[in-house]
Each structure stands twice: as structure tokens, then as C-alpha cells.
Amino acid sequence: MSGVSSDYYSRIEQQRGPVPSEQILAAIAHGLHLTLEERDHLFRLAGHGTPQRAVRGDHINAGLMRVFDRLPDTPAQIENVLGETLRQTPLAVALLGDETAYTGLSRARVFRWFTSASARERLPPEDHAHHSRTLVARLAEVFAKTGRSSPAGSLVDELSARSPEFAALWAEHPVLGPYCEPKRLLHPEVGAIEVHGQTLLDPDQYQALLIFTAVPGTESHEKLQLLSVIGAL
Image (cartoon, rainbow, N blue to C red; front, side, top):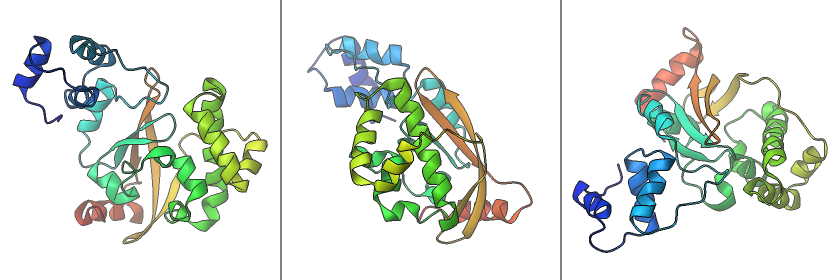
């Protein structure tokens, strides 16, 4: 939740007391699972302008959040269009690490992949080339829709300057392959796991809920169950 009392929220509605900051209002909106329209109304009540509805999509749609809240024992996470992880279940943290702790450009998975060697530790080396191409193709898709002046454009410019590998792939104009292909992961405690990522899209918010599963009866399925006991590292 937001950590804000109902009395404080009532004072905002009644326009009593000091004007809360935009950061507090954003926390309330997240904690109460407000829709964008409800969030904007809250900001107006408090005397602030409404936040820009950017393609980045950090404000999680209320419906998507309700689905996420019903998956406490499943590896699942919500991402925006740039591949920035907004929320993770505990089992997703155990499987993938805490992807919500990054700041700046490092919030984007594609940026970490091409600028930090540690970002590649959980994928087998033989899968790196394919994963690199997939990440570039996804960024290219967003870039085509939003343009150079968007956050996607900033990522492209920065990565082109920092990573020769990225620049070479970008020049090839890669396209996305199979939508739900399996992914092999190397977990530091349980070893290799093969998971399938199912995606629930929220087109209006440019967000997606990713749910990771393993085929029942397989070793990977047993390892996911073990991770639920081990917890996050």
C-alpha cells in the first residue's frame, strides 16, 4: 500500500491542510490501484497538474495490478514498453533477481545487457547472440512507434555510442521472432531452468504482465518449486 492514512487521503479530497507533494500523490495512486483517470483527478484535487501520460508507462493499470496481486506464488512481473521492470512477485525475484532496484538508463533490460557483463550471467553463453538480437528487435519496434525524441531514442543513442555489438545489430534492422519461445536460465543455486513466458498485454498503458512457467513433470518445474522454498538470494 501507499503508507498514507485514510484520514490524510480525506483531507486531500476536502482540500484541507498542506498541499501534498507529487511524490506522495503518486504513492497514494499506486497504493490504491487507481486508474489513470482517478490518479489525474487526485492530482487536480491537490492543486497539481496531471502527470504526463508518457509511453514509458510507469503507472500500473489498476486491472493489470489486480491480476498481478493474485499471483503471489508464481514467478511474474510487470514491465513497461522499454523493458523496465515495475513490479515482481517474490518468486520472480528468486528466479531473475531484483530487477526493480535499477535507476537511470540501467532500468531498461536492453541497456544492462549491452553495458554490464553481470547482466548476462543468468543466460547460457550459447544463447547470448540470439538474446542480443531479440532485445535490439524489441527496442527497434518501440523506436519505430515513438521516434528519436522518446526514451527509446535516448536508449538507442546511448547504446550506439557505448556498445559496438549493439550498433552492429541496430544497423541490421532485426525483427522479432517467435513470441513465446522458451528461455533457458542459469540460476546460481538450482542450475539450468527452462521457462516459458506468457504475456498479458495492456496496450493502453504500454505495459505487459509476464508469467513464467515450466512444463509440469520436468526437472525445470521441480526447480521452480524448489525456488519457492529457497526464496530470493
